[in-house]
Amino acid sequence: MTRKLLAGPGWVKDTALHVAFLSVFGVFSGCGAAPPPARPLDPYGERIGNCIVTPRGISESLQARMVPIEGGAAVLGSTEAERAQARRDYGPGGDALFRGEAKVRRASVAPFRIDRTPVTNEAYRELVESCGTPAPSHELLDEGTWEALRKRFGIPFSYAQIQGFLWDDGVPPRARNRHPVVLVTHDQAGLYCAWRGARLPSGLEWERAARGRQGRIYPWGDAYDPFRVNTAQRNEGDTVPVGTLTQGASAEGVLDLGGNVYEWTSTPWPGSNDKMVVKGNAWTGRGGYGRGAARLAFARDLRNVTLGFRCVADPI
Image 1 (spheres, one colour):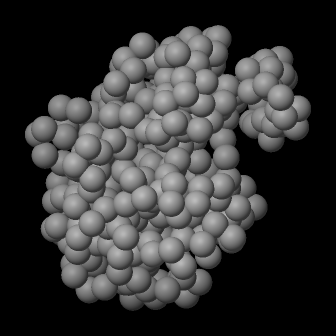
Image 2: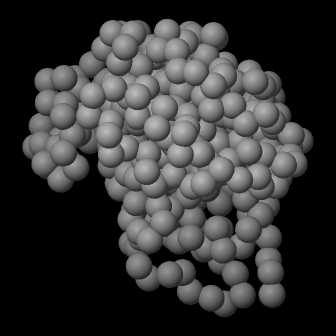
């Protein structure tokens, strides 16, 4: 029997996806089944689980900032010539990159809406205040915790280098309100989207939003241009407020897909139980990434100052 769990505007209507997501927060229900035992239940506490039972729903202001993406045939994947060009766009050290991308193909994609920009610190603060979720703060990420993460994941940033990104007492640095929220795990990103009555995009949805109906290689066209997006070549050395670089927009007006922060998706990395597909490019990144077809594999409990997310929802 197929049931629609916690259905609401933008909520995923696939029962299997509900089971996988809700088991994380200990609020699974349905047909007498038990949640999968592989992952701990309700890791953030009862208050947060209760927040997800009754999603807030997408406010009119947030709906206005979501971009509708038409359904239908979409160009996905890449050719060997495109991957070779991506390695040249990356520059020295890119010889072995992009070889695992899917081959170019056409596939049907259902219509959806996607956030015009990555989720910001000020938007994520609403979840922290409403549900008591842990903020990416000095309290959560002390020096010892960060050093353990660095060692485990090979993160290049020292604790001193991430100080400017950390929150204090549930409040982000004032100058960063409009910067993308970073230092959140995959579960926390998914929780925020679910609380809004939305969800993380699948890798396919993210690629469709980046490429438009015509299948552009980069969101803005088929040639890499480091001055359209916030990547290493701009030498910002930091995130920038979302939507700053409008010249990097996709065909349908989605911003920051090609730079600023890498972005979580809801798609598991093929053959892995603990890694997820990550799309986009970051302020530290180089050419080749930020293409619709490019992807990375990040452990779902990774936190980094280069990694954020955006949400998608069903059509209105």
